[in-house]
Image (cartoon, rainbow, N blue to C red; front, side, top):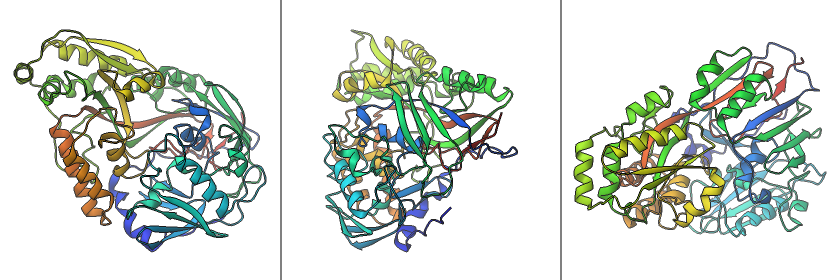
Length: 514
């Protein structure tokens, strides 16, 4: 395999601080048996693609974990930094310009050459999307162009020290020019990765074959099938029975049975993911901060973590995990029923209707979490009903503000491997993923300052300040800090867990013969 180039001095200086995040993936599977290059593999993933494979959407994550879509840079969770991928190096040409040198010898799966022009065209397509990607959009990037045969220049409207992080977002994956010729994006045969998609069953599965001409070396599997299994219990069962070789995002309720199952390994890693009860701050009674604080005081997070999560998660102390270098100092809120009742009275709350919690079915444990919350809130006189929904069906109403509460979880580093993406998209007044419908000018000013701050230490202090504002306003109820948990059969070889769920099938992934 060709050796990846080294990170530029500028990039290294700006981006090394995340090493302390503790996001290294779970251990690789043991390679005690011989790999069989004729083997195929089945992966159970927890979500299905949407939006006709549009790269600005979450469909990009499916293409990335399937070993199809690749980006110019790559966030290495084990090292805690951005490393070269389809670009070999980069440098800041001016305060508003970043130049990326593309890798030589790469071909798209349709046989066409990987060029600076094709990269610029692909990234420009993402910028022009009707609903741009959270990590890469016109408010952040003003232009992408090829300045010569091997150089792609990214221009920003304001100084942005985190451009290399943004180019590691799966939404900036590069497809061949032919992929953009139709009414919708067509990734089939147009990626650069070790696997090429050959067929799909809508909302059910994606089938891929080996890319024999992969630039990164020999591909160890003949192919794979990625299944879209939204039910966590089903994912756990299928890896236990052998129907799946790898199952992602295993629910806590299934851990004990899998950890005792023969021929199954469970991998765990620290994850920047917090189970959260999102509240609609733009709608009564949640538009009253006193009411939101009352709900927070009503919850027993320690009991929730011990019961539903069986000790596999810790009570959350706010929007960040305590281990994160930008978390600041905070402790998990303690249940105080009397204080909650006083806050409710001060807020003028009257129980004129049951408040609804949407529990997304992709997370099997959320049905039980919702029941615990329902009981906690009943104790202070707040009636709650529970509705189970797939996230895709709930999201339009949630984004539009037509909901009360939704149980979900968000990986803080998934859009861009730095909190700026999460803090901007989820909580600024114009945030494109502001499920909470929260708007606070002081908060927005802090985030704007952080976005243009080059010093990592100073930027992290601003993130901590932003987190304190969110906590003081009780914007959401942050419940528990979760782990990333995957399960795999003993026949799987060279699998490295990615806590950010972006890289699953790689050229090195292998399977022993039966």
